Length: 168
Image 1 (tube, rainbow, N blue to C red):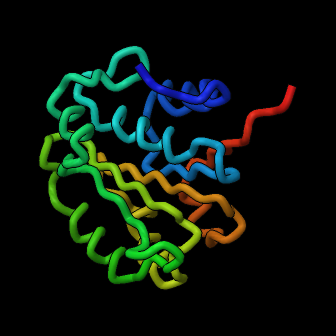
Image 2: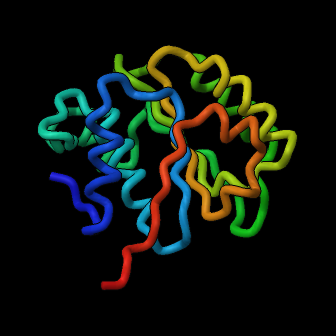
């Protein structure tokens, strides 16, 4: 069972009910919209060996590794320190890692957060992997500021708006 915020159910369905998963997603929206929480659950779903009813099973070896924050096919690209940028050296290290075969025999998932702090050089280095991804590698980029990203990055991803709930 997924633990979503009430306004995220439609977004979740659009992500998990795809016949074929895209190679890259870009979740964008204001802070507080629950993008990170949903991304974590989506990554778990993508890595799960036996997903059920649009949710990770929570029982397989992949789910247990994910829950222990030790899944060998889960990568996180983020700044070393809050307020700093994602450097080209970080991207090159990541690209070298994802060129290897999946250790669990399934997908590899890369979360880039916050995507807007990539330097121009690091964004361009990531671009090649977004243009020609390895089979089974899925990127999930998260941003609060869509306009800060290079158009070439945005054009290689499925854009998914994650708005705040409406006040009713």
